[in-house]
Amino acid sequence: MNFLKNLTPFFIIGMISIIAGLIYATILITGNSAQDGLMGIYILLGLIPLCLFMMLDRFLVKKFGNQKVNKVQFSILLFMLFLWILRLILNML
Image: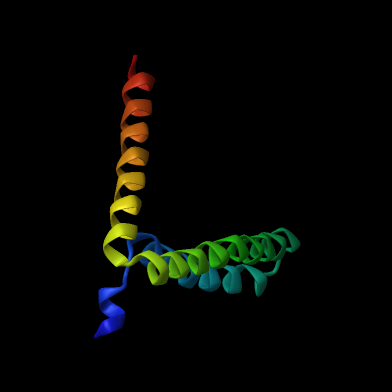
């Protein structure tokens, strides 16, 4: 149960991305065309920074605690949401 207390938004999003990326890359690599295989390899290489980012997240949770890391991550997510909404509004003009 201690593991469930240490979950952060970036860790959950990262795990979902890794699982989806591995499944999609496997499907693409086993496909018929060379372009699909290269795209699958590109997706696998894109998972390397994601794994490093998740290790950094785990290190910060261990060092500063779950509550402080969650505050920072939620503020980053809210800022990204604000920028997305701002872009949406400005594109309508």
